[in-house]
Length: 89
Image 1 (cartoon, rainbow, N blue to C red):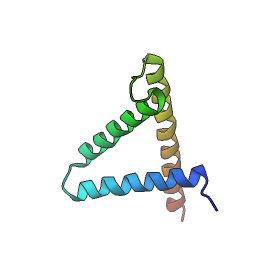
Image 2 (cartoon, rainbow, N blue to C red):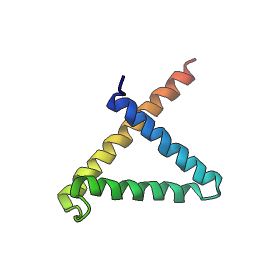
Image 3 (cartoon, rainbow, N blue to C red):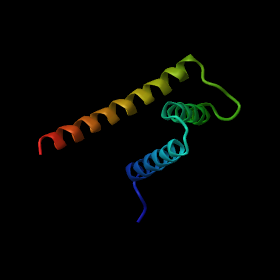
Image 4 (cartoon, one colour):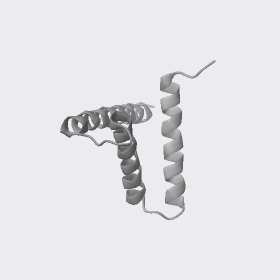
C-alpha cells in the first residue's frame, strides 16, 4: 500500500524537524538552524519552479511566497487547535 501525499508530506516534515533538532543539539543556535532550513527550502523551491539554470522572476517569487504563507497559516491553525484541545482537557 503506497502512502498518500499527505502522509509523505508529514513524514518529510518530521525528518526535517529531526535534522534541525540534531543540528541544535550539536550546538548550532536555533535561529541559525531555522535560517539554514529556510534558505535550503528557498533554493529547492526555486529549483522546482525554475530548474537548475533559472531564477525566479518577481511573479515567481510572489507564487513561492504565497505557498510559504499558506503553509505557515496551516501550521499555526493546527498548533492553535492542539493548544485549545490540551487546554480544554
